[in-house]
Length: 636
Image (tube, rainbow, N blue to C red; front, side):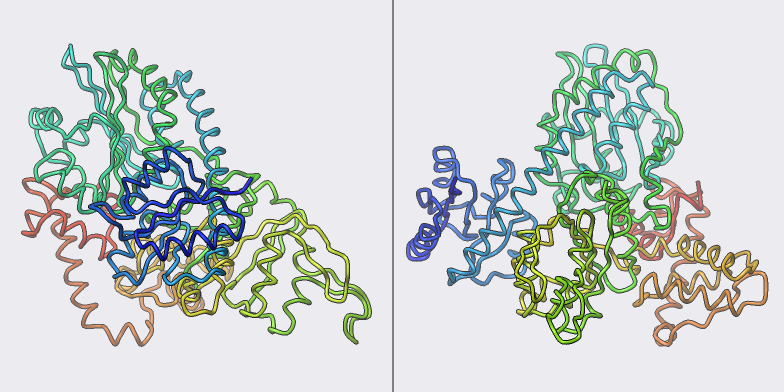
């Protein structure tokens, strides 16, 4: 059946041109809409499969406003636009379109964009079905579990983590008639570890009396429907002094998803998912919770009798089902943990392409290996190809193989890398290095899963999964005309973007200790640790070579150190060139550490570190993050 396309464009000539392009290609075109209001009427009446959407439209609402509505209805869309400023472009990107078409339109570009969008939307719907089915089964089991409220609630958060990411989850039960409130809190303390905080611990963290806390809890901002706030909206809604703002400032949180559950006429429950990612939540999270609402209600209703009997709080809970896949990837930065969550949530049978991006030295190959280990193809062929190491004239021979006689030196037939990966996985490292002239042939192989050997006539059907990695910014490569846009979107179905080490500087001590242990074992050394002065240098360095640079630095130190610890280390020239900045940071670090020490690790309230340093709580959190301090580990 032909796909049905809706064009939302208020320029008649542009809309008419698009309509002719689509109809010549065999698409069915809905009535053309000139505004958001008209588009919504047409969507209700004609049910399009995909929308081509101009950003600037007649009326008060923009295409970005309509895009948010389309997301709630799971209708895919592509933006149509002339040149836009950076703010508009960023706002458009946050709605996760399937692409952009820049005016004036070329027929080839339009058809390529539609082909990509159809493919991505099919993958999106398939992943949603698998995810919803898996979560529904987990929630059914959870509703029948008798492990106590704290453990059940922790499991609820754990099951949702990959789809509704959070760093702190508060669960607030309310019984109106009896004026009773029950609060549970869970802070993520590691990949698969969660610490249950008692109300008393939360009160101590916030430095408020039990009476003050109860009053704040009664005045807390409670939405009567599930909703979310990110970044600026979060700070505007939660005024200074409110319970949500106090909690956010104490734990360094920047976004909130509030889930409201009606359990009975007299009982309700509010779940607050907090994240350190300022743009953590979107309409897709609301949709997921709405689709699973009945099963979620059953879980929470099943807990009421135990909760009224008296809440019991545990300490730390952990699940070890997937830790083994990440045991050699060290760190607790929230960006890294979210990547682990996405990998752990992958269906083992999925063949959707995975694209791993990140600067050189960020550990892309270790992430690729984790993806492979999660897959049910882990025992099948896993063929690694370094695309940067293949001369351009040999790409076809290496990837597609050749028959005997294909060229003078071809005395016998040889299967290519794709054929070797049949039934398993092919890992294309440095995918951004593939020559542009070869990319169309490469795309065809990905689309149709078939190849022809060089010099052969037979079409060979294959079954493989593609994982690709690159240190290039492929969007910039596309814009520069060096990488095909259709190939980029064909690969970019599941994106795992690794942060550079400078953006997860708090992970440096753990990484350094891990490498020290590893090289001690390798070289049979007995170095017991790294001196604080050396660690200070590490925390004040910008690490252009990322984790690989840190690894090499520790290896050299292990080989050259003669004492019991690494007491001194020659840093790169770029570090010493910026030593004045480092000196300032070291002084700031000492000041913050001293204040935290005096406050016993407390940040907010009377006698807290923020008060001692005469700065706002939010400013102190930013300073702690910048300096790479871990308040919880050092002062709790």
